[in-house]
Image (cartoon, rainbow, N blue to C red; front, side):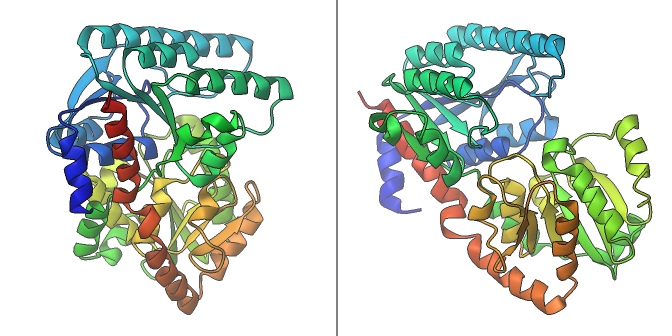
Length: 410
């Protein structure tokens, strides 16, 4: 990071930034927020406002980086709602959560503080407007807007985001260029400069720690009841539908005897999930590993990545997963889907391969190509080279810090 840029941030004087999210599940958005805290200039302070029951290890990382942790009692996890009654219940949870956030902010936030929140600007309009009246407010959106909705719904989103971005104290970050370009189409050209990029990214320090550790592949894989001499495919993230979990297992079924598959996730599997996994008949070539068993810190989890030969994530819907960038920085070839921001990092035949979301057969075929040692080596070099520059942590946080400083000026 250039010294003159750091000096400019420090010259802005003390800033207090409130990082807010209303759910207990965690992923790339939280790694992104953690990178802001870890790289903050001297004199800046961060307050993390999250629901009670949030991951203890994650909260320890924020606290170790110097953030104050304040807990909410209301949780609004973004779980799918099926049917009108579930949708009504989810809406009520969201409104209760937003009411508590506002009440807490009124009690603890001082004048001139900044708010950076995970919330949909097309949905949580009232909350965001009230925060923006108290202080400069930022939202980071990781995904483009859903396309399979009515024109009436799109017009409604456009009105809401235009209303928010018309406020001098509200700005929006897109977590990838695809998201930025898409969201800009919903607002007038005069407001599009208030939508800028700040990529969800990986910690270079954690990657370097992982690379410094010796790899114990034989010990780790045999300890999981897997073979150390078989092509090993890894996915990391929540074991949920939008991550393509069943396509991952279908690929494991198709490639049984040729490859073995590991999914590292933050939550215990349910009885229903275990029962469905059994139907794929892959007990000898698939393992689900809890994140806490893969490593106690992010660096340790990244070290676990190095026991794999390929990183594969057949997502249906997300922006640009941090886990993909982390895997690239560790030199793993990538197989993923052609959605949203993923093609910005996964370049066909250079850093990996892309298939259409939902095509498990094509996903398996792309993985099968990587049985070639020479091809894996070439894609590994491409991945390492690509995980630099615009994908580096400091590039992402620098844009955010510039906007924070501009927000703090009268």
